Image: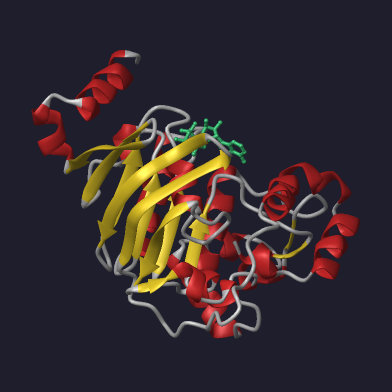
Length: 293
Ligand code: ATP
């Protein structure tokens, strides 16, 4: 999400130096384009460090008039809690999470963090406190160090190394002849899917936000990598309020709470065991996903 604060001239520089990388980068530009309306309200204030108590109160939102994607959403997430959103494709899981960094503003109701309406915070101060791990990791032509430091521009060497260590990138760095000075991207060392995920995780350790959004990868990594990445993500989410956009039920079992999103609303909530026992929407999703294997 750091890219949202990136000055436009930097964005152009990235495109110029990375012409074939545009496809991956396009998504970010699309997001920038699709959220032109969200600007600071007059009187919006920078928020200090947040604890991360999130509330959706009667939230309604649609991408077009008369086509609500979310309607009457009430949800309270405690600071430090991990909530996983599951549900059929198109149910609105991603949309719900996109409202938190205000890629879009709600049509009805409000969202608060620590009691303050998001619209009363400056966008920059809000987004500084939210880390997003997405499937597509944005890499630019530069060194591994620069790509990690992108999590928090101006971070010192020791902090960058610590973030790399916590994301379990240190073994890779030790193997590379130029270590952190190794060029990555199209003209440099090509990183695997798992290594890119680790890079994204390192950036967020560096950014150290109280709130995390994990957009779970849909394309499978190999099992060993997957397990290791899950371990890093668990460490990353420790002590942070975490919203997981879950595409695979197998990874959400340990969430503090699972919320089933279906059509316009939230239809069920609870822990994995409770929901399986309840024999409702989650159970049906669960049975369908595991029967399909
Ligand atoms: P998936 O599991 O497939 O990622 P999801 O539950 O995350 O689905 P969303 O991506 O939030 O669902 O989509 C909810 C609805 O909003 C869908 O009908 C989708 O087509 C629509 N939608 C999502 N993004 C946009 C957009 N940028 N513009 C218009 N409609 C959108």
